Image (tube, rainbow, N blue to C red):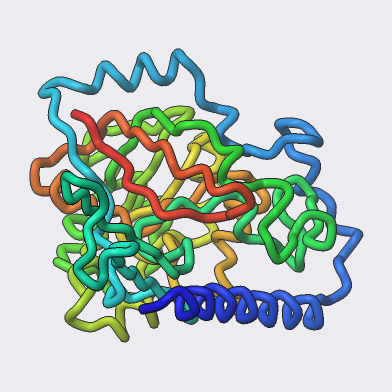
Length: 325
């Protein structure tokens, strides 16, 4: 693949995004200026990190006490071009050896190296969805309007580069055991009563600053039934979302691609749970988290460590969170 081919890939991606952005601008509807009840944020009119404000040195120290065995576990899924992704998203990696394709070597020691170029959407695979990712009628967290901060080269506010390292306690709620299903049926809505029942069974009480992850068995569909994997999913409903937010959690998520029941059985809106938790409450979404090894060992709480790539202007990014227990 020559240099012109790579330039064409980059230009094609840029033009595609520009077209999407232009189309979104055309579809903009009149903002309901009467509904301003969810902003400004409780963390201040200029806040850009939402629930991450809840993190503190005390919470980190408390979470570190959960480490008993000194074991670590990566929570991400491997990413390649075959991984199913939301709608238009794709991932392609290209390997080249600059100046060496024809068998040339550099220097007397025959120095050689590999280089990779990735042409992909940042929302493929295990990911952190920032609070600038989901809005309501072009209004985002803390009342930020798209026209004021969204550009073709990224967002000027609410980017993932603003998010501090997330180091806290995470809890895993095993919904497969609760429903007695290896894979919880798509469209199953988790209620407050369901969540409280699992918490009680696992002997856990949520506390401020937690990351809450749901294990549904959904990752088992990858490569076996990608169509079902993307068309529906089990997850929390609005009642549960509001309850979780009131527990002062920092992030929610699990092993599905949207972290909420889809399609929503009670609303015609697209991803209303993400709209509520990200835009209105400033709570982060962690998607495609592989909790299966933790569930197998019955590790229900652990030290969660996440330091994401600081892609300036991006609202979501691939991550590999680490569980330490």
